[in-house]
Image (cartoon, rainbow, N blue to C red; front, top):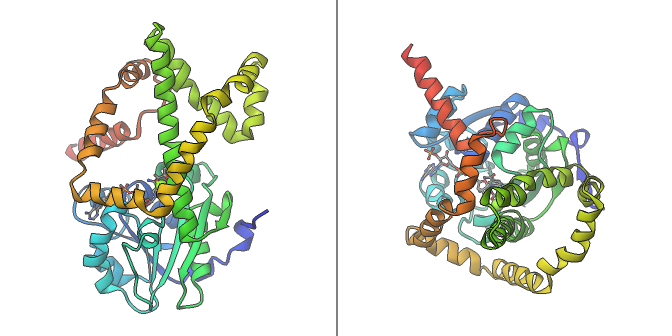
Length: 348
Ligand SMILES: NC(=O)C1=CN([C@@H]2O[C@H](COP(=O)(O)OP(=O)(O)OC[C@H]3O[C@@H](n4cnc5c(N)ncnc54)[C@H](OP(=O)(O)O)[C@@H]3O)[C@@H](O)[C@H]2O)C=CC1
Ligand SMILES: CC[C@](O)(C(C)=O)C(=O)O
Ligand SMILES: [Mg+2]
Ligand SMILES: [Mg+2]
């Protein structure tokens, strides 16, 4: 088994002696910054003027421009959307990097696909949490953590592994497990996981199941509860105790159905398509397509995004969730409520 690192394996003093800039205050940015600060590290935020700047200030951070944050710190974690990182790096980071600084990433895309080539005189590492930013924060607040992968790409100072491990500890990952990887392995496995299983695979499975039932005349509400709402409960069981735990809790009828039907739906052909997806990631074809989609201002991304919002599974889901107040509010709605609360507070 690979060596998984926990609290006792980490010398937190190395990062504690340095100053960290979290660049970006979005999904991962806010979680890293808040968790690091509560773990005892010295953190400032680098962002452009606007929404994130306000949010980071409200959370009590010293907030600077990206360029100033790079000038004032030794460790910079780059948490902007992957497709925007190159432009911001060239304009606001590269000119201000000092010899021996550490430039860090939470995903290897831009380094692995050579969109960002840091100078030889800086350290380059990655701490990639295996979970969404809001869950990195929520889990930490609940006393747990999300596992992370770490990798060292350049080590000019000799202490980059310790800096990376301190960082991973600071965001809470030493509570869950920290595993060594390379930029290549993280980039390819992360892109594959999100496309084939966690995001693309799962949303397509839900849509296909929902539409199979509704096209056969079943009520959309029944199809929603069956194929989307209950998915969380089954995934929670899997998270807590693997496939075995799901099978412990479900009926024997369901388990027999799982055995005789699961592999007919996700079959050899599906596995061949998964291999195609992986090959396109490995060859750089996916990265090339994503970069040119952004250069063209995202025509396909925007069109598909609009179409997906209007799917019947989404419409019926919105109505049903409104009737289940105990189901947590979507994160976006929560943030809007928070902004309204802040405004109301300010106007009084
Ligand atoms: N999302 C996730 O859970 C995960 C992400 N990662 C990786 O983490 C990194 C960050 O991703 P994520 O957290 O999703 O990013 P977000 O999309 O949440 O980042 C938004 C942040 O970037 C800022 N920003 C956007 N555009 C610009 C710009 N042109 N100039 C300056 N700042 C800008 C936003 O500021 P403003 O408010 O002003 O727009 C905001 O602070 C990526 O490398 C990603 O692959 C890794 C694991 C999981
Ligand atoms: C699964 C999507 C992810 O890789 C993540 C949350 O880990 C991402 O890029 O957002
Ligand atoms: Mg991921
Ligand atoms: Mg990802």
